[in-house]
Length: 488
Image 1 (tube, rainbow, N blue to C red):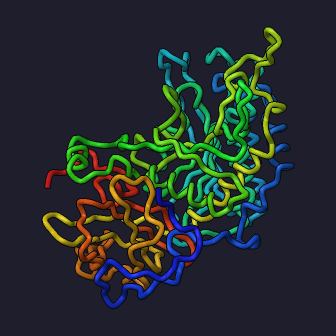
Image 2 (cartoon, rainbow, N blue to C red):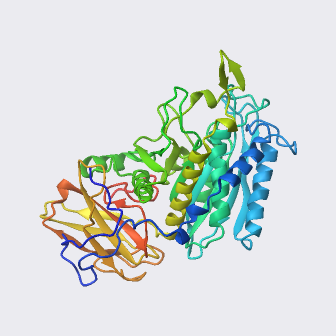
């Protein structure tokens, strides 16, 4: 199956009948460039020593169970969240107060399942505001709470080293590194609680983001990124799995009807974010690679990406390639000669470090790239295909891609590149401009390309940084589906 060319794009004949502003033979990079130099690679700054130090600290709170004590200054979830907020504050002091540090939470009432009494769910959040598009956000998160065998046991020690201390220390390390740089878009670093009790912290943060009027470009939910071998001895040290949804969780009857006619079941924003992550990883063949899993989460299980997907935000789960069930959700014990428990000595620190490098590289690229455009394709009863897409603020070019409908990955070569797109407020052949509403650029006409046989997508680029591809199908845009949708 075809994959993106990860190097320079070679000259090719355009399918499109080019307007004056379309690129001639393509010499520039398209969706992804070759691996960046060390000076431009913040992933190279990831420190295993700092990951270990943070892990020692958070395990030192004994348990981080959501139902554990909120008032003990040294033990339990209250002390752990207080420390995380203070650590984000120390990072902010090192970057001239570049981080807005805050707890984001609320009291959750008993639910008859895993919340037996009114419980404060408090997330530790740090926001690095974008310099150009502060309401356009990327969220990187791990769940900070831990558990043992009984999900209601908030008393016994629950180290939660892999689940999900590993994702938590990665978030801290990413904030430590990336806060030393400036980005056009905003990055939100989040340590969530309440995951083991029902994904409560993620739901609270997702609601809060919506209340702030933020536009979510991507959510990278890292849950268990610290072990490479299973309890059966099978190991896979070179891959993380990235789970992505197919049909959108926020779909409507009208959207489902449109997808039956026009496609889109394999082109949700999360699915294209997963493809983008796999392509990024492949640029660094000695680094951590991505094995895409095309389902929302593991069979019969869930994670903190789900509340964001439910609200229409593009989100994926990044997790170990092989789970070790003896060392997650287990009481600390030795039984029949087998040691159980989620302890730090069971971690693969090289694996965790490499997974952290991948995350830092992804955050760096996503925060530099424009928002993926919203794309439409018109090929009904036509011998050609007409593409239109929304302006992406900060973009200096758009790259058009296609793939056959029975292919999983975009073609190696782009169809065309639109250089120097019209400035914000200009329109070429589209609708608008309207105050506060993105204008539309049209004119990419693919002569002789019968749309029935192809899927089309567009990525927006700012210099060498390109967004994930947005597919020209119903529900393909990186934005929530209107609820309820208006009838045309």
